[in-house]
Amino acid sequence: MTKGSKRMTPRALKKWRLRLEMTQDSFAIWLGVSRSTVNRWEGGLQTIPKMVELVERHYHKSVESGFKEMRPGHLPTLLRLDLADGN
Image 1: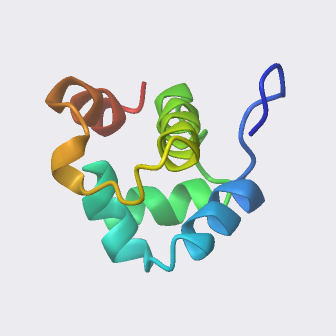
Image 2: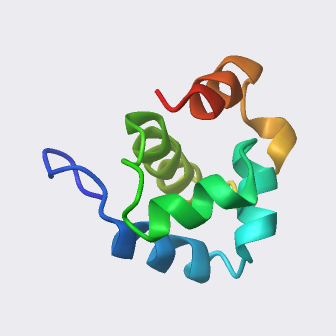
């Protein structure tokens, strides 16, 4: 996603996940949601929360600044709760 762009699409989410070389299971763990939630997002059955877009932006900024890896523990608990609630 780029600054000022529209909401993240299911295709963009899947492309990002595959670029990270993650399965739906590992991506779900990383975000603190269930695999079925990731599956619904990628299938267009559920709206991708704005928080996921923010995680993507934060991830890209972190990589650009030299931070090469984000693990589940790097996501604040509040963020994981927001994702679980679908916000």
